[in-house]
Image 1 (cartoon, rainbow, N blue to C red):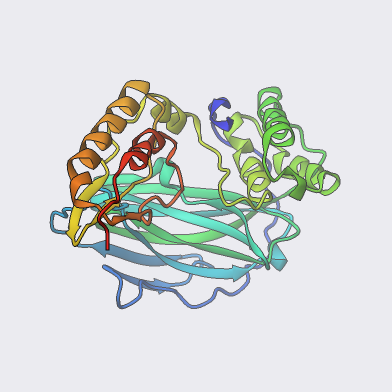
Image 2 (spheres, rainbow, N blue to C red):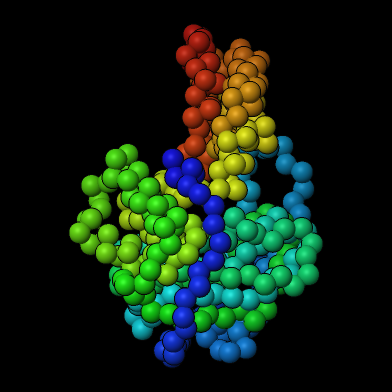
Length: 340
């Protein structure tokens, strides 16, 4: 529902003297068994910043078209205590070669989990690009314990990031004005969560609403409110709700044709296998075509699945399979007689 919120621009607020930045932790690189390689030199808390690389060789053509797009990160963290009540900006420049999608990203954590995340993928740098400025800005709320930042690469290709650094910006003040349109977006989000969120009981509104007002202070456009909305949704702790910005919402409403089909094959001895991917898109024609194709694939293999099916949902990372349901009805008609 939040995908219906309006589009937006940037925050403009007066600067004040910044506090000293805390020391960062060691860099976390892709593990040895990852298909990605990465390097990091320098510190994000230094004026010159850090230089980071992350790459993945193009994979051989896979027969499993339902496999999710891989990704990996190079990351580090700083303690959040000295930065609570401020906005933090992560900035740097990205250069890419054949990148599926590269971005800077930042996450604000409490001791018991994520408070706010912006992975930057809604504005990722793709393909081949020369040095491109990239920023991520998030508020550090009073519950914050650490701030995790880094570079993210989705898919194959490579990204080089230079002068990656964090900056402590203005203090969050409850009396800072909020533009009317931005306030309407925040009010709409609060109303949706109060009325419709499955786990809305996890929200202590007496605490939440002052926090949201604090994070919204100085907002001039709708997108300035997005960090506050992401904080609200993460506080539900349902591991499902998320904000879909306008461009992504438009793509979702018209999308569907780009989804990979299910992967079906007989394994022998009366057992068949089906890999069901996540489905994204609300286009009804594409959804019907997806379900029809799935029916055909399942029907063609039914005679070789007398003993049953292995249903693989590992690629359905977001559990978004509403459009898969019509296809799954085919299982109810499958004959399992003769299975030993």
